[in-house]
Image (cartoon, rainbow, N blue to C red; front, top):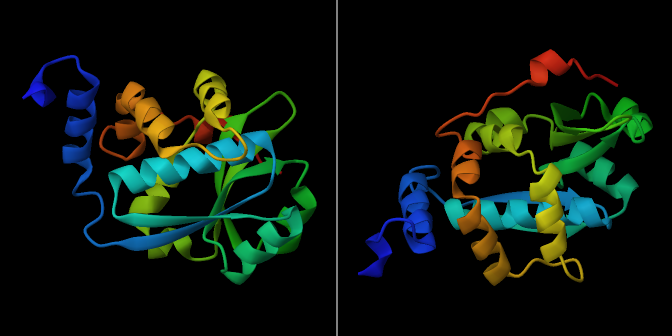
Length: 191
């Protein structure tokens, strides 16, 4: 079988899938809110593909308004968002601070940071997915390559599988098997 030939995409994908089968024993759900903008859409689309390919999770994406995204996280209608832009959205953070949890920045720019926000209690409800969300940092060249796949607000499954095969070790790190260096504590970014 050509699945086991070294240096093939099939071997990398199969190996990663075999390693990740123990990540989640039972099917579960995750609802991710995002706003209609190129970067949030691309980051959220790829998050869904990565989780659905590597876990038993069913990921529901909810494109919504900025106001509804924050209210939905606070009310528990949505589990998370991976594209909260601060300080631009600081008024929402101030308003909902007691109803959401900030997992910290997942990308820093010169005058902003993009944070991962979860509904109150989510990090205790699902430790494994919270670990993944903490590690999910789709930025730089990876983000640019994912944004190029995001046509009409959608990344096809076929394109996502090809992209994941090309980024297998990075995905494995995010899944928590080999934790990458995390400099969040050194960044001390607060808004």
